[in-house]
Amino acid sequence: MVPQPVAYNARCHALLMTEVPGQSFTDLMHACRPDAFAEAGRILAQLHSSYISPETRWTPDRELAILQRHMQGVKRVLPELAPQLDHLIANLEHRSQELCFPLDAPIHGNLFGDQILYGREGIGVVDWDALALGDPLYDVGRLLAHLLYVAGRQTLNATAPSAATRCSDSLLSAYESESGQPVDWPRLTWHVATQLLLRGKISSLRQLPERWQRHLVFAVTEAARVFDGQSPFLRLPVSLEHA
Image (cartoon, rainbow, N blue to C red; front, side):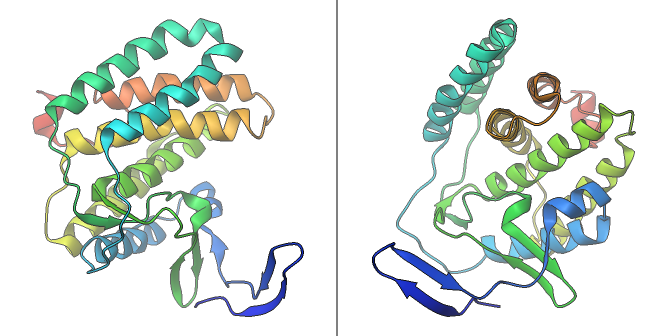
């Protein structure tokens, strides 16, 4: 459902609109609803196969530059993470030269749980100002990175990661079925690792929740595990697990 204009204040440059119905997908991440993740996977596959042609383009080089800039703040507040971060970012940069990123699919460009509203009538995606042409697995990786970050914060409270794994399995299975193409795992894990670092910085440093230092440590450590194919939250294909 598209929000409808209610009032506009030119002096304040403020537009008041009706509320879009639905529950934040971030709340569903805490609830670990595999069915909701399957529907999100189908919706994303439909977006990525649509005929939208935005002028903006996503590139891995631009993403790495954004990552480098944001990680400077992480290293300032937790300097003990600097060596691990520098090593991981260097590996991500090196891997990006080896991967072939498709750059011609319409992508949301800023997808995470708060940008998806889930209701009885289906799923709605909001905040399209970053719409671009790029790698479709960028959207998938961002959403999975948010799931891992939420699940990791729960794991800090001794919650097992198996429920989150079922959610990631459901999203990827539905995405593959709807798109008709298998997920490229090397590209996907690259995206999840980079976006998990950014999610940790944004959610931990901007919001400063209780135990934010531990949340940042988790984000950096888990990003390295994702990059190495050792994440307990993602069920890698057997061929990659033994590669």
